[in-house]
Amino acid sequence: MVGNPEFGKRIRDLREAKKIAAPKFSLRQFAQAAGISATYLSKVETGDFVPPAPETIKKMAALLDTDADELLAIAGKVDPDLSKIIMEQPKAMADFLRVAHGLSEEDIQKLTEQIRVKKE
Image (cartoon, rainbow, N blue to C red; front, side, top):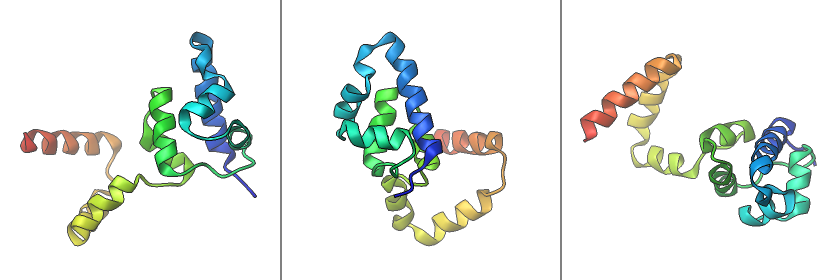
């Protein structure tokens, strides 16, 4: 089984950095907190196994205090919540994403803030 070395390295780097200040981030303890086996986590970190399910990746991101969407993207996965949002209004959301595609990250952030303010 071929894994995702980039995802594995990112998880290992984040976990090792956290382990310096908090011993609970040992491979075994982190795996247990994330709800996976230490053997599986080890194989993921070395790139031998594919990344876990999106919900597990989100849990790992929370434990590591990092952005879940970044980890999901590296893993080649999408947050199931986003799929639900798109399915609620498939035509409008698909059109919105296609139009927004190609904008800079800065422009997307500005647009996001404008929408956030309008919703409040």
